[in-house]
Length: 99
Length: 166
Length: 351
Image 1 (cartoon, rainbow over the protein chains, first blue to last red):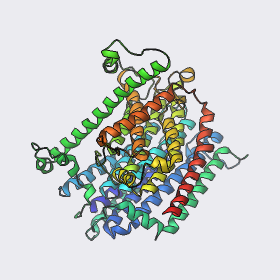
Image 2 (image 1 turned 120 degrees about the horizontal axis):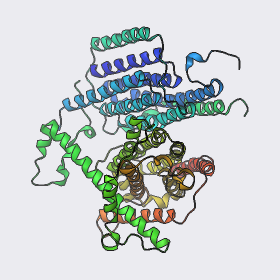
Image 3 (image 1 turned 30 degrees about the vertical axis):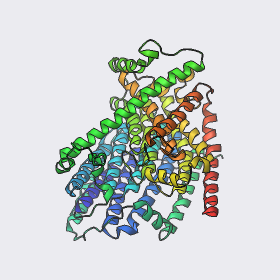
Image 4 (image 1 turned 180 degrees about the vertical axis):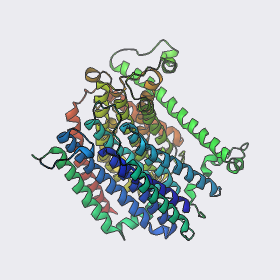
């Protein structure tokens, strides 16, 4: 069990680094997805640990996966809309609010 | 019958792949490689799910993430960066990011070792039946809410992509 | 980590113990990790060989049938009635020069064919050949069959992008868009079968059909949806727009040659073979049938389905891209949802 927690901690740290340092919107999205996967890993592991037949953790992981899919769909739609307007997907260069 | 050492070794192997792939996805300056590494990362996580006795979740992970989200991301890449071959710019805050990530990771790993966890119980052989019961019984609200959120997200994505004039 | 693993996480099934061969000491495999690795490798080779052989047969049948439809003879020179032609072609493809465009992204260019072939071959693992006989009877077998080949979409898109060529790029985009669009109605069609059989394992599926009847009789609409969407997913005529020679040269594999090209070819035929075999399991009772042994029944039924796919290829014209997407989203998606609802209502009323 400790092993699982160590791995998910490492992955969470990697995702955090990605979110903090990357400038491209698509890579940011990937980093966020890494964070969500690290969390899902913990959910599944704890579902395995406590009352496995209730499956609460696995249900949570499935909900998480669905949310991640929604997030990707909306996020990528936003990225496309931003690219059409600004001609870039670098979040640092999207700097005016006027439409 | 195997003792669980082999499964622990397999879990660690998948974990190693996941960590390396995640690092590659975050560190590489080529967007396409980042996405490929992300796909490898997701597959490794699916392997870990399988070893944690969550076969259904593992396959859904592959179905939705690798078959769906990665394809979507590739689509977005292709529609937004046609012909782009030069590496991406990196942020000037890399040092700060590394410090924060190191702190978060160190804290999480330290917390992992500090816990006195109980031993795992017996997993039911037929996970799908239990999952179905859980989804349509205790977690019914979550199930319904997910449906609404998915619908809203799809409509929102369509509206955003179509632009202001519908 | 002290845990009790459920049965299906053990590797007992690998050791051929169920074949009861007298000269095989099954314990040896479990005592060593390399024995286990050896077994896994062995099964990988077995599955890959099976798929390869089936593909060769398939290609031969397709050539002969197409020749008959067009009033030709087809391959005749190599071997009796050209039986060895496919084998010779394989050798030819394997020794051909492997050209990679200078501007291509090397990593993605090499990865893409593998991402197309490997899932198609992996899906073969859960196909039930006989009444109890499956290489691996996962208890989420049907989901596995749907999930693993979905990785192919990534491979198609990568191939198109990595080639750094406009025709490949367009072909890849089209192939992938088509793939993920048709995946949804296809999954929904399979869901009705799962509802009826009450099991996600491929052995359970055959068992349920042994208890009732062939599911194609109970769910004809599901079968139609499955058949059409499967043809669309594996880019077969009339849905082969990603590879339309007249407009896109050869689509996403324009820049590929030699062995890598043949991997795409193998992937396409392997996924069609696997999908046909699984259609037999889903709708035509798998290996169920009188007199003959189950495996023979299974092969016969699969052969009939494959024959129909070949005949379709040479008798129908091609769709247009926008018609194709409209067909998926405006007709097949609502149709499969209605089908799901109807199946649920009828089941509620009957059972």
